[in-house]
Image (cartoon, rainbow, N blue to C red):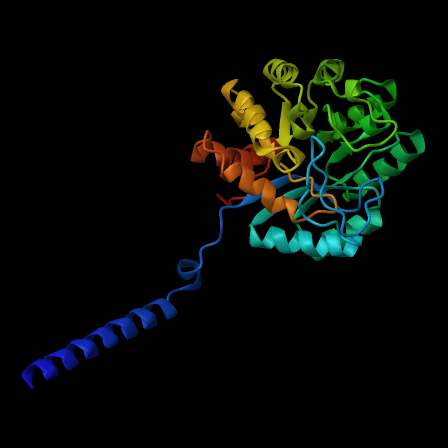
Length: 318
């Protein structure tokens, strides 16, 4: 009988202990109970669909083919925006460089998330009339960045004279400027791999020493050329965008590790280049977080710190 009483007392104490723990957790202040993920800056978002047709539901592009892409293309600009903002909130992406062809579509993004985006014009076909319209948007304060300058998709190299006024304007206004200069791109008839050599940026950087320029995918696969250019020109940065999810993971890691081993880890920034596949934002973040050759400090540099320095802003989120 005495043993039964002792067992009952023990069970009562166990129940009370569990109940006390539950009440303690339930009344914790919210910041302690549910901590946010560390902040991230995405240096490569698109507000509207790419300048090429992607039917809704199309898997994300992948290289080298044959391969199987992941994710499904969105059906509209509105769906792209909604899903992108959801993923940004879920992963605590506090700032993003957002480029687009249509200012009206970009305005919807800015209205949906005030203060979240650095709006910038997507440049596909350079022309004087477009440049003048663009300047007015900068004067209004609508645009605060330049590019993606994607003229390589038409076979135009970055040192083409037609791009000179754009670089001059970006230097004059001290704009963070994104350019597509690399060896891979969409399967467009005008695209030329040779026009993506980072060495073709040298004339631009010499002519515009104060230009804040960063290169899509850090010039992949031109590893040695990109290391040379970044080592010589400290104003040149690189992002890691589609190569975080478009390439086999081993190929991406080989390239990123080479840049880090060359001492360039403080000048590499995260960018998702989500286009119409918002799910790829999280794939890109995961690729950085799972890189076992990076220290925690180096991961935070790529995901946040380097972009904050490049943008010359202080968000106070770290």
